[in-house]
Length: 116
Length: 452
Image 1 (cartoon, chains in turn yellow, cyan):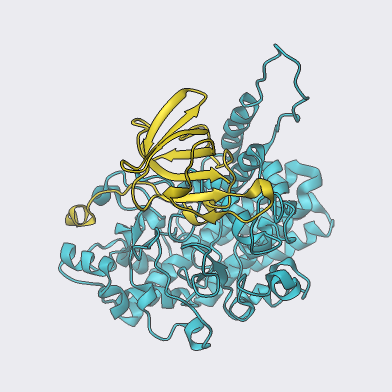
Image 2: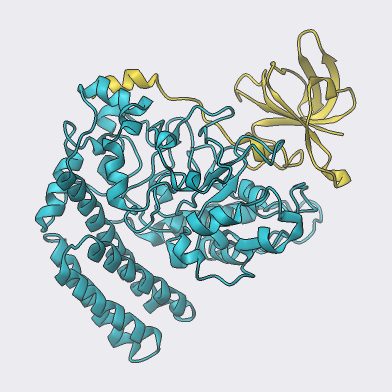
C-alpha cells in the first residue's frame, strides 16, 4: 500500500475555481483581494517579456504574465458582462488586479483582471 | 463515538468574528454594522433566506434541511411548480442553458459550468447536490481546501468561505450574463464568515475511530471487509469511513482526489434519456478526471451516489468498485500496483459492506438526533425547527436500517422515538416526550453497538 504514495506523485497545488472568478469585480475576490493579489494602475507593459508593472499602495511591482494565464475584462462598473481578454488588453493607465501564483515571490500572475 | 462539543467551535468562531470589528476611532467613519455575536445563527439565516438580489434561490433551495442538506429526485417531486429551484421553468431569462429541467426532476442533477461560461450550450456538467454535513472533517488537504465534487468548487482562495461566492454566481443570477451588481450581489465578508460558520456547524465534527464493536454479524463482517487492505481496501481512501486518506499510507495528505472511473460507467441513467450530458473532466481546467473523496458515514441516507448521481443504492455504490470502470481506472490501477489486485467482492460481501455503512449512518443519525433534542431543550423559540430536523434524522435511521433488513428491534425503538418527537413537536407534554424519545434512541443504539 505504501507504494501508492509514490504513484500519486505527491500533493498538487491548491486550485480555486477560475470559471466563476471571472465574474468577480476587481478587489472583491474572497480571500484573495488585497491578500494574495496586487491592485493598482498599469504603469508599464513589456510585451516581449510578458510583464506588467503595477503601481499600487506598496509602490511599483513588475509581475510576469505567463502564456495561458487568464486575463479577464472587468466591465461590471458599466453593468456589462465580464469577458475573457488577453495580454494585449493590459494597457497603461487601466486599473488592474493581479493574483500571484506564489505570495512569497510575488513575481508571477495566476490571473489578471483589467477594468475596461 | 465521541464528538467534539459544538459549543466550543461556535465560541472560537464567534471570537474571530468579534475581533474583526475592531475599528479606528481616529477619524469619523460611518457606523459599522453591529458585530455578529452568533455567526452560526446568522449563517443559518443567510443560508435559508438570503437571495443576494438574484433569481429567488437561496443556498437552502438546493441544500434542503429535510433532505440532509442535499437534494434528491424524491424530494424534488414534492415541491410546488413555483419553487425557486425551478427558475429555469418559470423565468424566461433562464430558460436556456441554465438548468436541464428533465435531468433535474428525474435525477436531481444541477447544471454547473466548471470549465467556463463561453459556450453555455455545450460546455457544462450535470452534477448531483452534495450534502453539506461533516465538512469540518472532510475538505482539508495538504494541497488546500477541497470543495465541491471535484475539489475546485470555490473561487477566490478556494476555501469553503469563498465557495458561497461561486455558488451565487453559478446558481443565483437573474440572467446568464452574470453581472455583479445587476444579476446578483456578491456576499459581503461578514456574510461569507457567517455562512462558513454555519456550514461547518452541520453534522459530525469528528471522525470515527474504527473498528466499532458492532453487534450485528452482517455489519460487523462488512466492517472487517472495509478495513481489510487485501479485500475491501476501502479504508485506504476512506480512513475511518471518512473523507481522508489513511495517514499510514498517505501521511498528512488529508482529502484526496482520484479518477475512479465513474465517468466510464456504462448505461448511466442521465445518458439513457438522450439529453446532452457532456463528459465531466473533474478537477481543473482542462480537468484531470479526478474527483475528491466524500465521507462515507453520511453516505447511506444521502444517495444517489457519485458526482453524477449515477448509482441509486448504497449496495450499488459498493458494487461499483468490483467493476471494470473502477478496476481499469487510474485509481483502480494504482490499487492493483500497490496491492497486486483490484477489488473483487462477492454479492454477500457487497451487502455486508453496505450493511456496515447503513449501521454507521444510523448511529450518526441517532447521535445527531440526540444533539438536536438537547439543543431544542435549551433553545426555546427555535425548538420547532430543531425538532423537525430531529424527526428527519430519526426517519433516516429507520430508512437506512429497514432498507437493508437490519436490526428490526432497533427500528422499532426508532419508530417509537419518532412518535415521541412528533408528540413533542405538537406541544403535547414536550419535556416528557423528549426525554422518552432520547431513552428510545439509547435503546436503538444499544441494539447496534456495544457499550456506546
